[in-house]
Length: 115
Ligand code: AMP
Ligand code: ZN
Image (cartoon, rainbow, N blue to C red):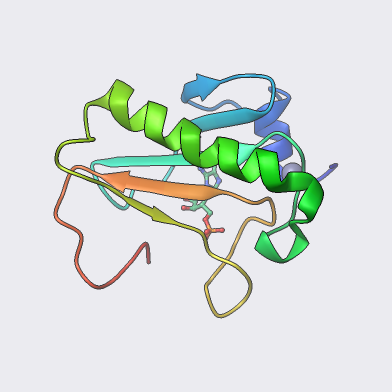
């Protein structure tokens, strides 16, 4: 998608600190970390948000969670735990209209989430 910053990160137009990549999923460090570890896990397919997910994406969404599991193992955070957040729409404060899963770790999470 033109003008989508995460699509630009996927195609290399905008740099990112990648922590995982395969044909369908990319994970990179959030530029404004809300925790010592703050990774964004995204599908390479441009999907605006959870409301745009269809049955066609069932495999992809499952794979994203499995990838988060793998990244947690790679980062060594599986023992202490982590939080996964998806913001959808205005009231959730979604800023980037390309589906993304925030993976937060490295501190005790309070009741307040990402922002
Ligand atoms: P959300 O508010 O759920 O849409 O989250 C968007 C996230 O993308 C925010 O946490 C931003 O800090 C992050 N972000 C925006 N631009 C970039 C970028 N170029 N590289 C890494 N993270 C970014
Ligand atoms: Zn996009």
